[in-house]
Image (tube, rainbow, N blue to C red; front, side, top):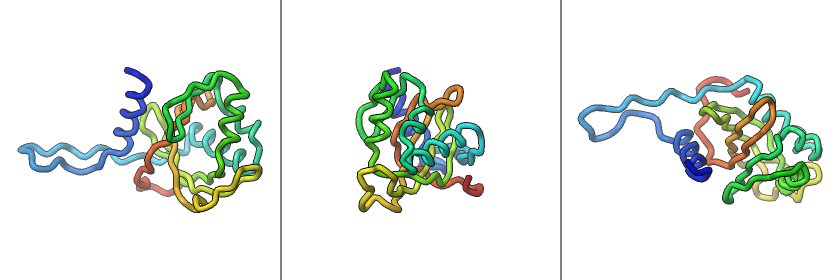
Length: 159
């Protein structure tokens, strides 16, 4: 499976509507609801967003593995050096406050409220809006950072 196909599959898994199938003879069971994550992946994501929001680009960059793959509304790109990862983090105009995460293996999807960030170019009209990113974290390091549509909130309290 190509990387692009993997991203598309993750997006469809994360954002398929729940409920029974319509019009068929046998209804399809609803997928299980997303689960709120309070695990090590969520801690890494929260740490990354807090560091970046406070202008600590190098510390946020240290949470990524090398190489890492990113896609922020673009085709996935593999970053092969710490400098490329730092440039990616620095290019994000907004900071982000983690609202909640849901698990859709092998990804943890984080939903954020966008904020201004120290050292950023300014979030402008994006401030206060929501954004979501699918993270794949291996051994405590971010190996994939993929912008995705905002999933519905989980049924449990926010993390």
